[in-house]
Length: 200
Image (tube, helix red, strand yellow):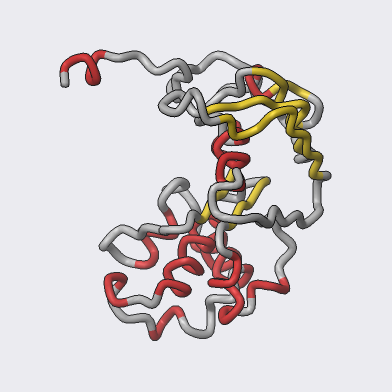
């Protein structure tokens, strides 16, 4: 247990070194990526995988369970580094960015979204607790949530697709540049298909 507590991560989320840009376009490129998870070194996930997603476009990665869709996002968020190859944002290697800064630009709603047992407002503000009421209202409108948000029951009783929608709303309020959604079908009942976002 103490070894786990004292272990230093290879990727330090609190490291303040690295580039912080005034402006970002949002082009994403995975170039000739080779990757295996540290806990499963014999199971190769990617072998020379390449992918380009241009800024402002919607992209969908479709495949069987375990085919690496979630791994792509984990690499873009730099939870892991590939053994070979590069991950580029606006033609800059992801390793050159300050981790905290680049992660603030990314919104993710995972397969098993989680909300805090607090108010809807508190959940929306998570990640950007200094957001103004005007920013919250804009986020609510963008997420197509204005019509039903006042009628919501307690968070613990929400249907899964509504939890997904609220997690999406929380991400919008942070004003990120990249949005990634797992299991996009949960969003169809909420009318989110009209919003241009990067999904997989």
